[in-house]
Length: 428
Image (cartoon, rainbow, N blue to C red; front, side, top):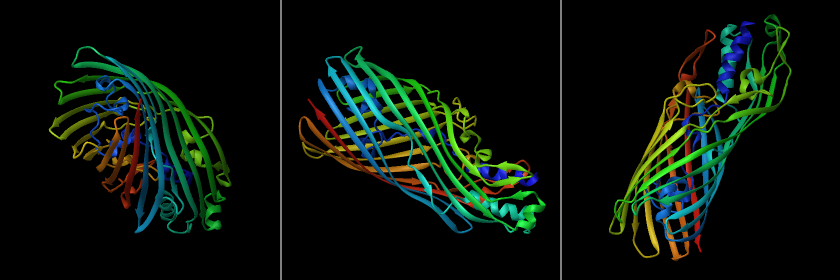
């Protein structure tokens, strides 16, 4: 029975978790030109600064974006690097109709989650489990990993409808209602080899574990915004997104030939929220965004702050600190048709080291961006942006679970992301 407790404690470190960085701020190509978008008045402001859209020129706008990312997430254990190298594409679409002091708009996008992570060579937690099995039996079990493949994906899709209205020539209010469809996937296959005679002595038989699970949820939230256009060259903006309550329902297919003391063991024992038929809460937290922009001749300088209220959210029943982001950037109009952009964003996720695991680890990051905007005519605009996300690689933290020491401090977690974004706006 003690070996089952060990097995459950160790493999539970593989469970999919996340924190404030469920949310994606990179909702348009503009973000990877200059991540400081909240204080700006743009068509993409439907997402970043909805109240500011009433200060655009009258007309109808269609905007489409694609963020293309090359993502490497890796774990290093005992000098062995286990990596997932994947491509991720995140599209977004905006529609805006502005007339006099009123605008109406819609946004369709991927607002949270990330790429599909696929570890063909395995994850560190499985290797840690084999090590611990041997340590607990003084090496007599001879446990080794014979199969170790895991993949997971988190995607949250948004449809947002809203509008904005001028209260005065300088002040406006805006907002809308958003619907979120969330999907979280986990697929795992793990096999262990061991001395069958020692296994029989502790009541362990079989060696194969498999789980294919889907968690789905739907929720509704609100977006509220204020914009103060102090002068023709100075603008301030505030946006608040309410929490989105998401109650996930799980459907899973599972198979196993492992038993301990006559009882079957499955990966759902280690991932209880991914077991078939389980309902659980994992909300998106409330988000507060502040921004300012200032035109100085052919330059625009901007800065912003984003706060994620993680403490108040129910995220799989776990507790996290609040997260925040700070950003700033510049835009330089060096000709009537061309504008150069650059910016920086620092993200502090609020995730404690205890939350780092094999498939997600929300470590702090810095984003560096630059790009160009080309406007060949008044009703056509193209945006090109590139970005590099530099993560602060960190080791996990040793945990004591059910009296068993889980030495995740031996695991180094790291990420690298390179991005190319493309956007197009047509005004008619």
